Length: 460
Image (cartoon, rainbow, N blue to C red; front, side, top):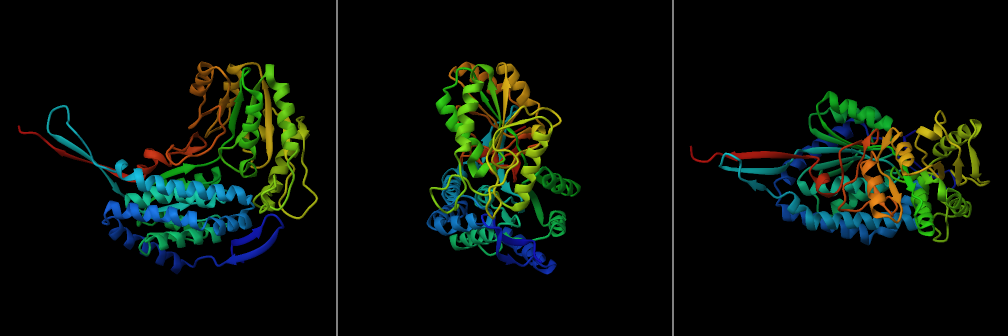
């Protein structure tokens, strides 16, 4: 049985199966990608930009079909899948328009005279190990900047989303990429390890769990390969005592429930100052309790299934552990709706303390933890106690106070009076156990390039 099986999370029914690549097929893909790099890097930058631009147009044109496949493969509400495709198109447009300037030579005069030039050159074949939660967005934020830079890209998709990965490859081919410049590997873990070790692979990007990131990074390190890791998160959402509660609760619900809570940068821990804690909790809990399951393709549906039965079971186990050790479920609990599929009842936990799995582990689903804190200082202390450091948010009316909290958070990203998200031109990434490196923006396009110095000394 292949690992690449599509099981509709809304029903737990298998709808497709794709064969795992043979070793010979993996070798053929690596050979094509390596050969393609030699010609693609020599292609004029303006021509590469035109291909990236066209890919964005095709992603937009095909968004209905692509979004429906995402819903079928990992359960995302179709309206959210369409939003993901909108971001994908925007990323392609952004790099096609602004990317060439980011790759332009930088000329400066050294202290002791002469002329120095920094050139940003492609390094070769890149391997992307992709997750299931944003199958198009995660892949394109690796592909768009690096294809523009002259690298070629191999994508190893999550087992739940082979169809989406293959459809994206078709988009890139139809946009004008040469054969081998963007390839999909339906590979085993052993084949991925072999590809990381292969000298034709120059760099590796992993988006996924700590376990996956650690394993791939260890293999890449053994072979001195550059690696970018975007791993888990347990993002704090801090509510100060002067926050506009109506607006803040709206953002809190969206921050927790985007993609049914299955986003690494989703708000997961809500740290609310004592003066507004009870009012926030009442409104927030009521909003989550009002969500109900339905067909993910129906625009009226407010609650989607999780990506798989295994994901649902794990989340329920985390909630049950918290309840068994003294936490309180204000709404929900370790419950599953009475219907087929990977559904979990939205839950709000209070009284979560150290030693509970919900305190340190990432909760990937419709479960929120609300902590009462005395003031901003305690909120920052609790936020920074996490082993993760991806993103965070702070809500309040005093700009000096929100800026102070943002400056003290040990995260790669902070949003002020806005829910956590992603934009084409903003760097995305974290610190601590949330990973290393950045994607998107100027920082992202330069992660997998060789910044080469060319120095021409002055007359001596």
